[in-house]
Amino acid sequence: MSTIPDVKACQRGGAIVPRIFLSFRKPDSRWMRDRVYRALSDRLGADEIFKSGQSIPPGADFAEILRRQAADCELMCVLIGPGWLDARGEDGVRLLDRAHDWVRLEIATALRAGNRVVPILLGDATMLPDASALPAEIAQLARLQFLRVPETHLTDGLKHLGDAVSALLSDTDTGPAAEPDHGPAPNAGPEPSMTMTAHVSGGGSAYQAARDQTIRLA
Image 1 (tube, rainbow, N blue to C red):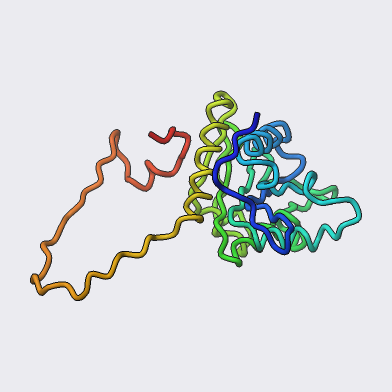
Image 2: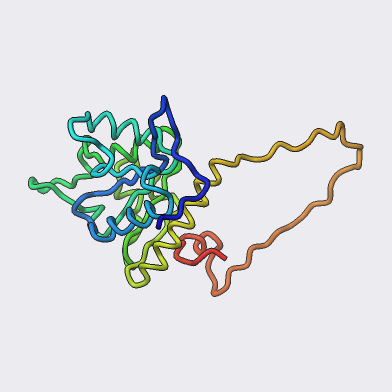
C-alpha cells in the first residue's frame, strides 16, 4: 500500500498538476529510472509525479504539455545515468548539443522559471557533469547539489531519495513563519559578535563534504 504524506498535487480548475517533474533520457539507465518512478509514486502518490510516458494522454500536444509542466513544477528531478551526457543521435551529434533536444529544453525551462532543480545521479560511479560539458543555458546544473541512488544499495538509496524529496516539497509548503509584533525593541546596544567554525573530519572543505548526498539523514 502506498504511503502518501500531507503533500497534495496542485489543482487548477479542478485539474491536478503534478508537483514533481522527472526529466530523463530514454536510453539511459532505464531499469533504475523505472525503479525511481515507482518508489516516488508509492511514497508520494502517482498524481504528484509527471513522467512523460505515463502522464501525457494519447493525442495530446506533448510539446506544449512538456513545456508547461516544466515551467509549473515545484521540483524537477533530472535523472542522470552513465549515458546521459554523451548520448548521440544516428548522425553522431551529441543530443545535448541540439537546440531542440527535449532534455535540454525541459531543464532550461525549469531553471528560467526559478523552480528547484535537483540532479539525481543513478548508479555508484555516475558523476555530475562539469559546466564546461553542458550547453550554456543549463550550465547551472553543474553547480546544483545532487542526490545519488546507488545501485549497490538500491533499496536504501530509494528510501533516502523519497525522504529527501518529501522534505523538499514540505519546504515549499511551509514558508518562514511570521514573527509576532511586540512593538519597538528597547535600545540594548550592539549585539556581541559570534564566530562559527565548521569542522570536517578527514580533511577537505565543508563544501566538498556536502557534495554527495548518499549519507542518510539523521
